Amino acid sequence: TSTSTSTVTKVLTIMFENHGATSVAAGMPQLMTLADTYGQTSHYRAVSRPSLPNYLAMAGGSTFGVNDDAPPAAHALPGSSVFDLAIAAGTSARTYAEGMPTACALTNHGRYAVKHNPWAYFADDASRQACAVDDVPLGTLGSGRLTDDIAAGMLPEVGLIVPDMCNIAHDCSLATADAWLGPWITQVQQGPDWRAGRLAVVVTFDEAEKGSNDTVLTVVVAPTLHAAVADDDLTHLSWTRWMSDLIGSPAPHDARAAPSLGAAFGL
Image 1 (spheres, rainbow, N blue to C red):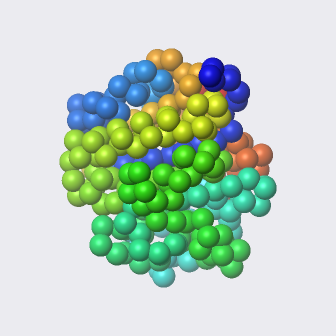
Image 2 (cartoon, rainbow, N blue to C red):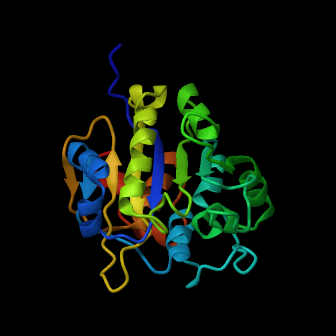
């Protein structure tokens, strides 16, 4: 059956780590095929370093003054994340964290790093309760919550996938990350959310290599995009702005003044 040209109402974002656009272009051929086929940025930058403040900026529209990778016990943040805002707006949000032992785990476990799971840092009671329900273990390819949500056409409006410390390209190579990504993208594109035209997939990196200007490649995969390049000056706050616009909620903190990543691609 033909797919409709309906507007994107859901975005599934996959995070990788610590590589700038130049090294990604050389080291992740499957991702670059997606970039060249659908859409990619040319001037998208991280907002801070190390990892955690970039994730917090995406989730909360601010780095909250954080400049380390300490766990939630050291950084109990007030207010709402974009995930909480989605739920409050009557839409849905979910984080799928690879290797996480239980929902909304607040400490490291094996190859699960809580510093890459920003929802866990928002400490208000309502946020903690939502995190305990919708910040879930990823499962494995073909089995688990993400696989089930893809198959059922039940991906959330705001979805975040956090690979483990190897597959996220932190402890292992870009080739490993690329090999991990490919089958997941295939599975997503076989699901009803993608086939109905309502899903976009974003692939981005928390930051580039040390000593660089932190330009990272962000790839936007959507059925209506064909070799698109967004030349706008964008940051992780542009992702936050897009998610906020998507759910019909005012963007939090610094994201309110940021240009939207989605708008840069006409989505």
